[in-house]
Image 1 (tube, one colour):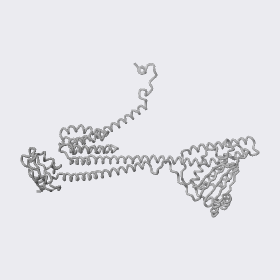
Image 2 (cartoon, one colour):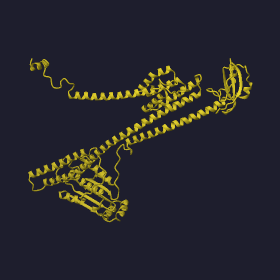
Image 3 (cartoon, rainbow, N blue to C red):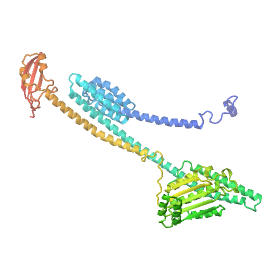
Image 4 (cartoon, rainbow, N blue to C red):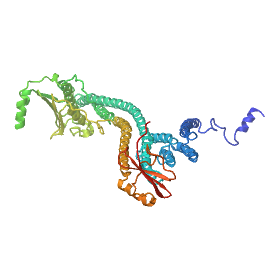
Length: 600
């Protein structure tokens, strides 16, 4: 069989030829998904292997004393081996349950809890408990329950007393609480380290956002400048085209062309306004000192008048402004006029940069709006300049009947047909310069006024919403540092305070038992040899001198006695002792012995 025949046998019967990659899962995407799953699975396997090795090392550390130390019974060591293995396995998911295993084993071996076999396990698992848990209340409750259980055992088990409970509390303090505090401190150190890296990443993101916001603000500023300059020039072009349209001696074709030019300029102005609105969306103006404009208000008015606009400028000096204010305003105007008349005439070229820019911007925008919405109307610019402030008023009258229509906005003076963003930007610019702005309709037109003080400082930029003065990331880092310092202080003062409290408690119990182990002399004299033990015991003190060891200097017990008890004659440690010996349930001997340490 040739190769073509073999190829035909591989092709499915009645179907088209298999496309490249038809037998693979989703082609390239399938290979990428399989590769990603393989890497994730490998990472998880490595992490599980590391955790398993760490748990194994923990178990070996805890199980090392089992075959070598003999302070606990053999059966308990045999039972402890699988329990410690289970504790090592649970130390990640249930660290509190794991830490209770050596505590229960130690409490089973002795009511004092401390054993050389299980103490290392208790220390290690208590450290991991503090390191791997966030909530502190379950751990503190477990320690309190352990101390309560030890107290119950000390009061109920034969041969146990409160001294065994004091030993248990000391073991809990130094073998459980102190390692737990160190684990908490290590956890807080890790959180501080993580918070530092998170703060660094967040600051980097914030810097990127600030850079992007700065670019947007700069675009908004450029858009505003474009609107101011191009919009004004396009309005002047429309005015000149309108003048050409109604000019005598122009034929019909030229008049139609002038009308088309005027309409095109108006449409271009509207499109420019829409585009600038998009660029200004969701941005704010940078609070910075604007550059001084090269064109003054008289130059702007002259350039506008050269374009055929009916415009005039009234520039009042300080004295003229004072006289007009005194004639038009009442008492308050008179007082203001007297103050303004004291200053000399100001030089327009010496205005502060912020005031100069705002003044030029107000006049330019007002002229643009007047030529756009009220073409052909007379425009008056009044400039009152004093030593302390500058007042500017731009007003336009009604539209002449002979003026050509200006589209949909014809016959409506003012910016009522626009978006109003120009007036809003004017108000913000004047406010930043420390002045006041007002735009309103009049009986026959529209009026824009602005008051700009020459000595006022610009207002600071408004704070963004939600800005509390302290960044959230820095506050989190400060909180993490405070937690670390608090953890370090707790790791020091809690064991010291607990030790001091335990020492005071043990000393108080020592005084109490010393006082309760004193046998009064008259009671000792009333006891008779041969009295039944059942009648003698109720008259004896609650505690003996020392139930664990014989007093120093005490002679050997008399022969054929079952037990001998020692009681104090006084509260002092070196006082003589009374000895009572019992045999066959009766008092067989009673005498007085010395309690002196034999140092030889």
